[in-house]
Image (cartoon, rainbow, N blue to C red; front, side, top):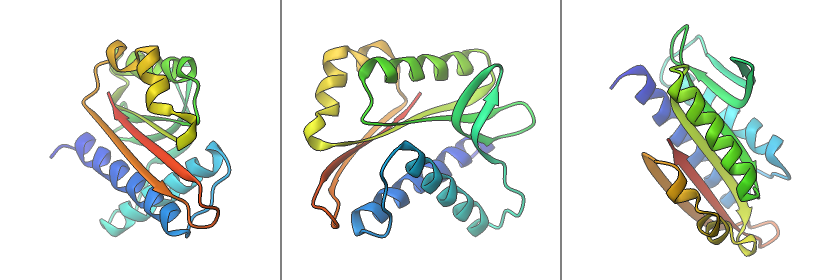
Length: 163
């Protein structure tokens, strides 16, 4: 497994841990910033468990004139670029996906990941299907997860997309 694939797996595991923490009531969130902080923390925790002492995970990372919500450095020249949205409008999500594609096509990113969380009644999947998101982009992986927050009973849908 190369470094890019290894970091993608760390990110996947961190996302699963964040969702599990929310589902169990250990993590509370109110917005995208909270989710970014939780994901950042989980990435660092997992890297430390793997025995890594020097971490290259950045929040609000600037690259080539663009800002990404989170970046995991693969080496001096390449990143895994991550965008997060809470209850995104499909047009906002499309803009982020285009940015990730651009970073991949320019060779800056070796992986592009989009993560989203929304209340189930928001109908994220249906909105994205109507907007044609799944036809406009080629995804290596798509994962959905639904759960109920214990502290207020809200049903949430989580989405992970890997370009």
